[in-house]
Image (cartoon, rainbow, N blue to C red):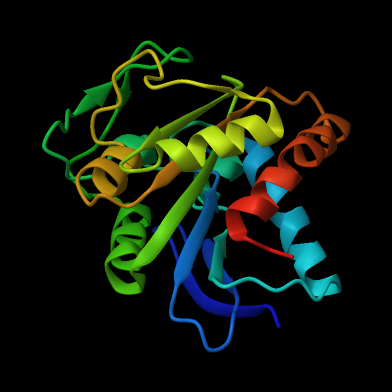
Length: 223
């Protein structure tokens, strides 16, 4: 049975929910997370579609599957990459390579804030430190590829083969202070980052979910 585990509130009063599809009596946890960036709705759409199907099906998995559909509700409301404080939440982690500003293909420069300055980052750090996740799937959009951090190459290769997205070892630009660096590289948690293609409308998002669904089910070992 799908259950709500946490219901945090960000700095602007917006809820951030964490749900779980449990496996009894397993202690093995995995995490699916999306919408680090408010202008990337594709990942949240996919995870909410998955949640809907989990409610309707009796799939089984050896894992407790934790799902956080939208990490950045303030950015979602503004439809901006950054959160309401103007900080890129995927560059805000206290990594060894942290930088106070960052660049990406979409904007020339954006603030990374101070290390772990944002409540969304603190939520994720507490989550990772508290649940001992065996693997993590993070969904972003626009680049149409699969990337990975930590000991996840075999997982990423299989995911890529199932969904047909190309697998890369490097995303092509600096990712100082990223979640992948903090959780995958520095904490050695197998972490796959999916970058979907850019959806123009809900029909496109439905196509993206159809492409990714078999790989997501395999990642979760849902049968």
